[in-house]
Image (cartoon, rainbow, N blue to C red; front, side, top):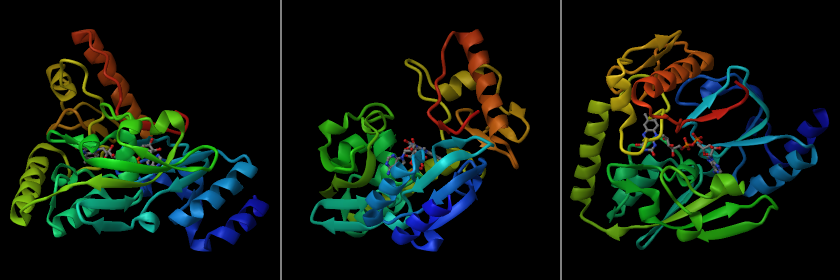
Amino acid sequence: MEQLQRELEKVLKKEQILQKEPMDRHTTFRVGGPADLFLMPKTDQITETLEILLRHQIEVTIIGNGSNLLVADSGIRGAVIEMGRQSAGILVEGEYVTAQAGALLSKTAGEAYKNSLSGMEFAAGIPGSVGGAMVMNAGAYGGEMKDIVSSVTVLDKDGNVKELTCDQMEFGYRRSCVEEQGYLVLAAKFHLRKGQPEQIRLRMEELKEQRIAKQPLEYPSAGSTFRRPEGHFAGKLIMDAGLSGFSIGGAQVSEKHCGFVINKGNAAAADVLAVIHHIQKTVKEQFGVDLKTEVKMIGSF
Ligand SMILES: Cc1cc2nc3c(=O)[nH]c(=O)nc-3n(C[C@H](O)[C@H](O)[C@H](O)COP(=O)(O)OP(=O)(O)OC[C@H]3O[C@@H](n4cnc5c(N)ncnc54)[C@H](O)[C@@H]3O)c2cc1C
């Protein structure tokens, strides 16, 4: 471990390397035990950091803004690489906006608005990073990443930087090829169109109000817990199953929006998972529908 630390310190500053870092600080659910190592490289430090970890056979987990994650109470073994504030540059050129993986969607949409570029309004309220949005094909209110991505820069498993077209990303419902190919997203380029700043602002405000009205934003969560089952809405099935407000420990089915499991305070990951399992079992029994999680589980449960 000391040798590993010494090697990492040749690439990263001491403050970019954290040991036993509690993951509840890095997830919007505010749950999760410690990561053995928590690294915050800049984009130009990633390749060397990964090389060192590979040489030491350290397992690597990539996270963005932690807004779609449930991290186990026992934490994460190996190293977590956070693509966050240190890799969050945004560049606007004509109708194109290029954002590094760690840039927040809200910031990126804000930059687009400042430059009178329309098309990204739907994403302004999604609390993820650009990297996480490429993995999930994040979407809302009729828009999704697929509609606005021009190209995505990734690092493949062999350390090569590749530029993928929107088609090559194989975007689908809350998925892309990133996960199965084991890519690390470095940046994304969006193609937007010139618009009226006032209209862009009004649309963003309108969607923000809809979110505040419908979603339990006052509690920590990871957004919609389940994927939308074909022909149904997860939230409605859960409500119709009588599970609104159902809770175990500090985790609860939101009464405001049953599609969200929320952390009412001091929830353990085990509480969240127990609520998820209970929902899945009850909905299956009552309606014969299998609910699959949209939230990604990390660590051992
Ligand atoms: C209140 C709330 C509302 C939400 N509303 C929406 C919504 O309307 N629409 C929607 O689609 N989602 C929504 N979400 C879910 C979440 O914001 C999205 O899934 C988002 O895209 C996740 O991005 P992230 O940066 O937080 O990724 P993380 O949660 O950190 O990671 C998600 C996955 O991406 C991987 N990953 C992250 N960054 C990279 C990278 N650079 N390279 C490779 N892999 C990476 C991780 O390993 C993980 O598998 C909501 C969440 C919350 C808390």
